[in-house]
Structures are given as structure tokens and as C-alpha cells.
Image (cartoon, rainbow, N blue to C red; front, side, top):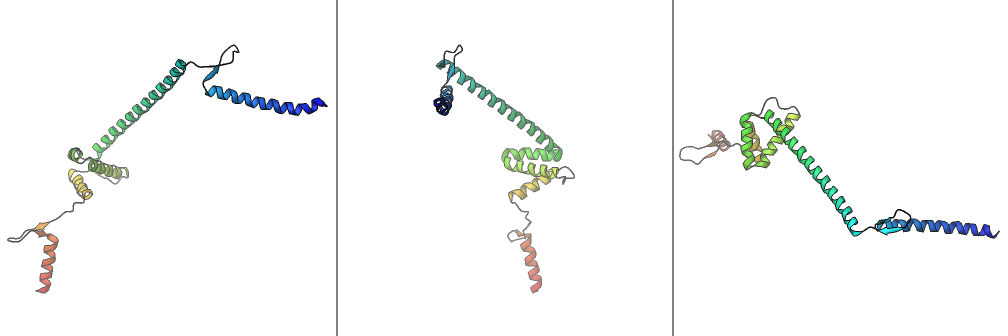
Length: 175
């Protein structure tokens, strides 16, 4: 009868000891202690071994990072080649030369014009290659420059065609 009462207590005690043993082992593993072969218990790694392991991990991480950067550069270069090939097929040679000149002074605008042309090409809205005048027209529209026709009469200052026509029409209505 005495053993039956002790058994639940013993089972609880053993479970508690097992939990403590697991926590003890986890603590020592996280502290860098490894079991020695031959049952001699736990022993701390030497600092040199630990440094070598850390260096090895960092070196592997750096190598992986370099591989990823090289892969990204290679993919970017491949995309640039494909883009250039597409631009050569979308624009006439004089327009390509004009875009290359524009890229020197206004790189954002040149890229924007190319993007628009590529989008139109991908949507199958271009039916023939774009000439230089087409690039210049898009450049002016994106730059906010409007076409203006000015008229200069003898002895008078230059005015817009709109103003001249409006004045002529109002003079006809009065006269």
C-alpha cells in the first residue's frame, strides 16, 4: 500500500527530472558545449574552434551573397540586351541615333519615350517603325511644349496665329 502511494509521487518526480534534464541539455548546447565521445560529459568548445565556425558561416554567407549579386547583374545585362534589340526593331535608325543623343542630356526622358514605345508595341498598336519626327513629337508633348505659329507683320510685333485670326474675325464683324 505504501508503494502505491509512492508511485504517483515517483512518477511526477521522474517527469520533473526529465524536464530539467532536457532544459539543462538545451542550455548547454546553446552555450556552445558539446558532448564528448566516450561518456565524459559536456565540455565547452575552444574559442579557436568557435571562431573558425563563425568565420566559416560568414564566409558562406558572403559567397552566397556574391552569387546572388552576380546572378542579378547577369539578369540585368540580359534584360538590357533584349531591350536594346527591341528598341532597334521599334524605331528607325535615325530615331535610335536621336534617342542615344537625348540619353546624354535627358536620360529620364529618353527612357520614358522608349517605355511608351515598348508599351505600344506590346499592345500591338504600332504598325510601322517610329521615325525621328515621331520621337521629337513625343518629346515635346512630354516636355509640355506646345506648337505655336507666330505671325509678324511689318511694323508690328509677332503674335500667335490664334490672336491674328481672332482679331481679323472681330474686325470683319464690326465692318
